[in-house]
Length: 466
Image (tube, rainbow, N blue to C red; front, side, top):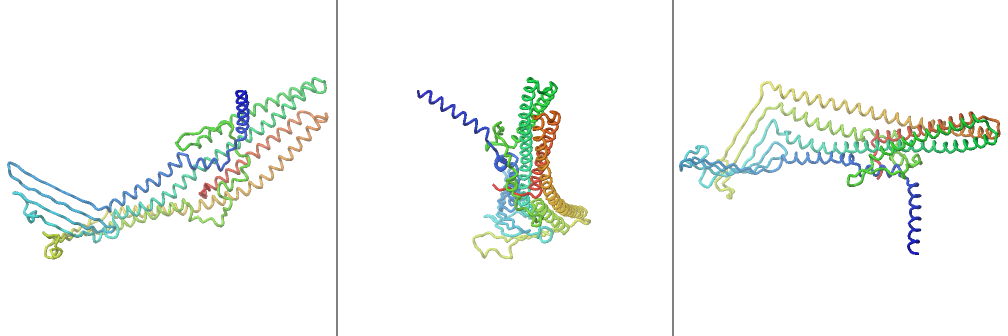
């Protein structure tokens, strides 16, 4: 008895599961949520920020304190030629200054006299500076500034990349919805063709209809089957296309199952899904657009590069001063009487390399500014054009809705006349073909409308709500 109850329970569960499979709907919001969370390209976009952070860390490394130890010894035939030890601790700063502490201990039979130091070694503490070229800006300062700008630029670029993949995913969803609706239209009219064929054949067998009507009804039925099969293949292909955007957390692709269907009521939620419900062109600030902000950060980075190249036109004047002492623990031992100082001056006579680099930096900066201005105009015009296009689609939708309704009324009237013997099957099929054609146009128009919504989402780079 228990075994029979279990089998009955499993059968009921299987039936309910089958019904649930038929009714499983994946909304656009759910679908884009999966894409935004798990798609590998979205994760890849996050690497842009990680790379920029790594570059910033690398640029900051130029200001890390350093310990340097240099030991050199030579001994030959029981003779110690020299034994040299030089240890230093350096602290580079943001500007062209570097603080340095040094210990030097040298001895040996053939030691260079200038290397001679006291028996316990010689200590030094001082500073080196670039007074002209490299004081206000140098390569390491420029690299740090640019690395910080690259992080901000990477965040904007990452938003653009994520927006791009969501846009492509949305187009695939809309194509899936379109093929699903087309298949549904052909499926509905296939049922009408079967009913009409069966009715015509019965009327022929009873002698009420000629054989040619049966032949025409059969041709129409086979045409409907052919169109349905074509629509089914298109739906399968669009399902496979949408599967390329569905992934699990462990980077495993997901295959879309047959029982999953698109949301036929996308029109009601598309604005909220794309977060464009409150979008207004009058309030659209082009300067906050990620593309424009990315270009602005690029311009700032090029300005840093231009300033660096301008600074390279100055002569190099490097100075160094070190206090010397044998007893570093005694503060009074650091006096102006014991010191080591140096001055280095360099200036290319024609500065051709430096002037060429500066001109190239100015040209790159000007090019980026031109690109920025052109991008502003392009984005503004695209947004305005898309909004006008969407407004036009609303009018077109009203027209196509009325046309579908009127063709449906004509078909129903023609069918009543046909069964009353006042019309022909040819006219009924003609009316039905026009209705199918118009419904397909309505589906295509709806698809174009959704694509325009997605294009507005992409062009304005709007962030969808989680």
